[in-house]
Length: 365
Image 1 (tube, rainbow, N blue to C red):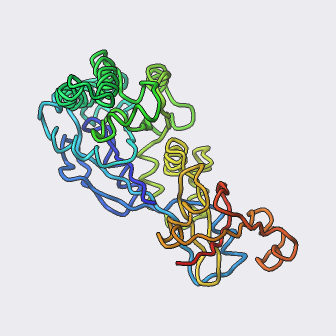
Image 2 (image 1 turned 60 degrees about the vertical axis):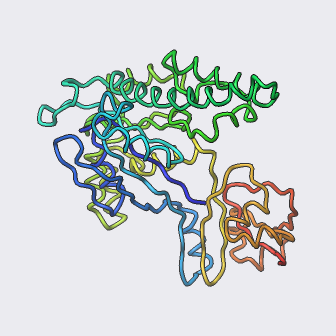
């Protein structure tokens, strides 16, 4: 399954610098607003040590990791919901993504102009929240106007939908994001077609100076306090450090570089892990001499759904799944040895796939 995260934020917070560090697609980074006019898309390999382990055991012809698309979207300014700056284009681009990575400036630098004149991460967050909320409110009010007519005719489904829409309207008017409304998944169907911007899951990427990359700083702490009641994650990252890492091609050099800063992993890894966690994603593997490959699925998916990610025929004609746990594969070295030792489980349609499962599907179409 394809995963797409949109990188958003005010102008000059480090979005394009971070994007350039994360991908091979080079967005222009400049010290003025709107240097990113069209969304830039970078397809980024998801690092997974388990692939290297399987490669060593199987010696396949090729190894195919799973990927995430990062989209660098034009900087937002106050008034975007009314078309200010590149508002309408920006907001349309956000609707397309699965999750939002909101880059927040948490560093001082007199050489880089802040669009509001001072560094204030909470105020920056609120500017973007307000613009997204206003756009969502506009969408909800339009649907309320349409739904009211049907509800007045006595349609039970429309009445229920209208009640939910009114809850969202009141929430947005109170300056809160749609994702904070605690209602059932069935009730959320009322807004599913609206693709509400503030309903999307969010990761706050706090862009800090090099000295703050391990511990954070007062700006990070202020932001954490401001978002503590949201269903969101806060990741500390330094776009400047990520830019330097991106220039290194040797893995050992990268490890040494990270070690110098007291880091165990790059900001990219942190963002990917946070994205997977936020979206409830896991990875399973297929392993053979032709290829070892990682596949991304939703946590809780059953075997036929997981098979369908490879090809729809695998799901339609699903017969069974043969499953080996990675620990068993590492211990016994080969698929044949796992089978002989009784460590290859034969699972049916109700099997819930686990992160790290090595799977082979039997199907008939």
